[in-house]
Length: 420
Image (cartoon, rainbow, N blue to C red):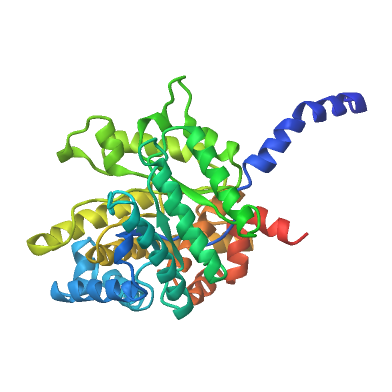
């Protein structure tokens, strides 16, 4: 005989209705779309529709000048078989899609050139992006980083944002992978102001509500720990729901704010790890993506191979910690970015697909995986497919699942909602 009366059950339902709403609306999970593995930053006035191909050619030329992509793999600790498999895929990637995400920079990489020059460059950048999209030479993801919303640069940042988006909207349909980046955020109010700004742009240009999403750069300690002892970054997903696409860690601004001397400012400094762990906690389950920062040790001159080793190690370190994206600042960083990333996925592919096959076929193996682990395994393999490290045919052969089934395993909530 059951002990709970209908009234008891109704009371529990009432007590938990707010929790149900929070979990449903505040933690929708990842939307299943592709996340780029890196973001390349260039001064806005240097962008042309040919830039992506030029960077790919420069990257390949640098690799060839230093023994080829297979040798790069060995420098990064890959055995000969893995280095060969990775090199083949990296060569194809650098020839076809060397930049996945490109940000035309109007902030630190551009500086203060006066209003007349920046106005002209904002319009020119929008026209160049539209031309690149029309010609099929634009990266899958592209946009701008404008100046921050602190008082000295706020008006300038808003004007550049307005001119860029308005010019793009006038030219035609916005690029599918359009991304806007708000830097040096210190308070929740700045993000709310950005939400208002893009909402007004949507209204003025007849865009669907929510079309203009944006990234938040976490570059100040005030966003990690506020004056009241709470974490403002944890509030962001919930004060502007659905508007933020990603949080990007800013290595050097953040480190400098904590008085870390220049020699020791790094993506792997303890202060960086702490900030990034808070960021991970803040957006877990919200669908907001994460990106690590950059290293300013560039593979040029006599330091190419040492810089590649450092960059490759840092890329791998980020991947192992759940940061699947990072910044690249120079064409010569592309080979080590892709080589380290592809090795990460290819090394983990056999075990991940074997466990997925056991899970799907309900076969007992050495590891009894639960649904949450199966999601993580599928998401790992899917990321490898999306970036070019793994072929769909390999997934079918090793795991026995088609791409659609792999996506459903990685994002079951999304698959359930689309099947209704």
